[in-house]
Length: 382
Image 1 (tube, rainbow, N blue to C red):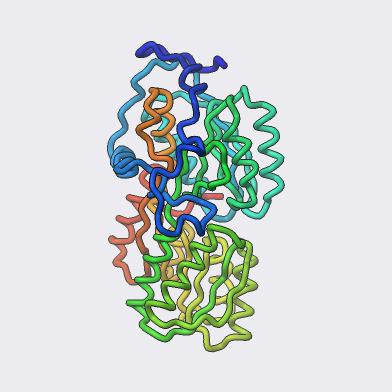
Image 2 (spheres, rainbow, N blue to C red):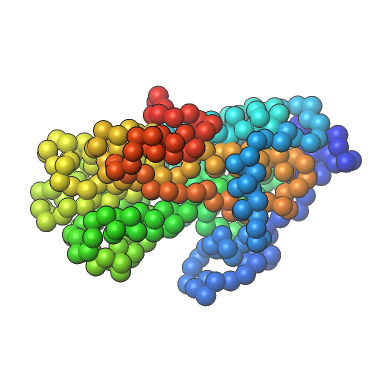
């Protein structure tokens, strides 16, 4: 394979890209947590070398250090992800990714394969196309519509000798993979659930009746919704009146919220598991003139959510320092090109804080500026 030529420390791309997988199944876990046998996936602490996440977080938060080897041709990157979804997470990740590559002085060419979060089969079609044209790519960035649904596609991509595969928006490497992807880049949905749980318990108190607009059954929703449920019921004795699976869509959030308002008048809190459902839920609450007396959450701290918080239409959201994922993936490419991939964590995690409507305007602005330091503040134009 000869698409990128490097001249440094005697290392050619063929050696870099064709080296043995760093994360073969027989090398994992590096350690086991007590409940490992009950899961079909590894947690970050089980697969990351101590200090490796913190090291990459520090690199991502610092000024870029340009690529240390000569690059004569642009690297070719394919991105298969649900960037046509309402959430601007994917667009921001792409902007942070490419702008950090620019800062690193790494020439690149990208090909995007867009879908919506619910278009599982379309991602399978894209996977087939990428594998058939594998020699056109050096790196594939895959953002699964849902991890379990796309597991076979990730497995096939990771086994390819043509390119390295990065997974965005998940942090739970599946045990079933013979060869792990070269990297997982995400924010801990469990940590986000616990952070918003702590905030809501402190702000709203005990014995609250609540409902949830959940996403699609699977790891992501189990963490965002399921871990929130466990936390809030144990911490503050809340009672779940109803849970509605809204498929991570605006329509699902809208329909679920209308049903909640009609059938469960005792509900005073609605927990939404992503931006799209939060926007649909907010629309339903505003239409019913209930936005002031129902506490509602989003997920992720996207531009749409922050604007809704400023308008006092959304109350709180676990806010990802969103640009960390894209910037970390760009840094990981640099490490691969320099032959330093063994220094990388298998799973990179960004930070999650809680943004809410009681923040001072300047405090919310500072949080947004930090989170979107590459992709820019404010809602992105779609």
